[in-house]
Image 1 (tube, one colour):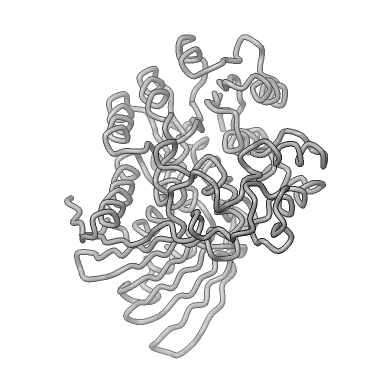
Image 2 (cartoon, rainbow, N blue to C red; image 1 turned 30 degrees about the vertical axis):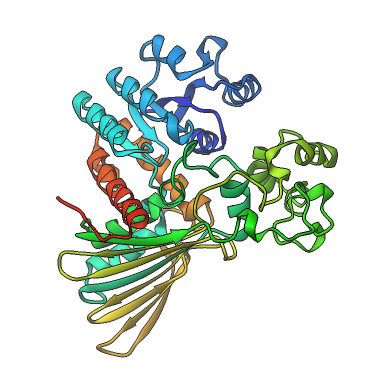
Length: 417
């Protein structure tokens, strides 16, 4: 297969994940990086052997150089997707775009239109479509193993400490600087559910709020920062416990610790917690995104789907129950229990039994699966190797925006074809 040359726009964690997979397989070679942080940019360039003339301080500077690679991987912050995506599509780059596409429908439509207008491939990073587990579920449904799909229950267990890290103290804590949590965290869950049904819902409702991580819930004795707080040892959201516990574990140092400090010593962590956002009391932050949300979808044939996103869980694999006319599937992200109503027989199937990927990889193998599919599609010129295109990704984003509209207005929102 032809080696695909890549430019990475945004040299953070997600950009590293896709770039490292491309490098590890030999299917792609990173030849340029655009990253405003000079230390991060230099480290990224050093890791992938990028020449100094292909290091850029921003996407605008990169775009001014013309087309220097086959494809661009865009992993900038959520609100900074539209400019680079539209501009690079106009330059002829195939694009791997981190989810969400954009933070509103108008900008997402601009991106989809740019890809269509220029005839380039646009793969939004709905990584859940690319897991061996998803392939297994979809194959069972398409084969009619449980008859007609009537209802689905799906849980996204965000995890108590992940909520505190990303959506209370971290970058995704506010809608005005990021996006609603349903879009930022769970747009690929909604995309995944629509993928299972094979069509968009006819209407959607939603409920949810910021219930716990707010000043009204703050204990009287709590300090503004964990390092000064007498309640810290018994608090489930203790920043010292979380981040000091990452030291010495390469995976945890990569994430979540690298968001807190580039250092890898106890003193580095303590200094960051004393002065930075990740050391704040979870009840004394400026966060406003929800900590739990329910989305209910109804399809044109009467089938229904309920989706729960909750902070108040362990951080673990998503859980799904699928109810069909002839059978039932219960899945935990790694294994499926399939019950056949006609015979009464039960079967257990592990995702690792599906050839081609490991469920232990990032997002259950989806990070690797998506990267591999995108590189293969670009190398061969065959967009059919991708499991969604720009139009389908835009459609599933519209379901998310409809759900947010329903939550904010207390209404049932119809979706028009």
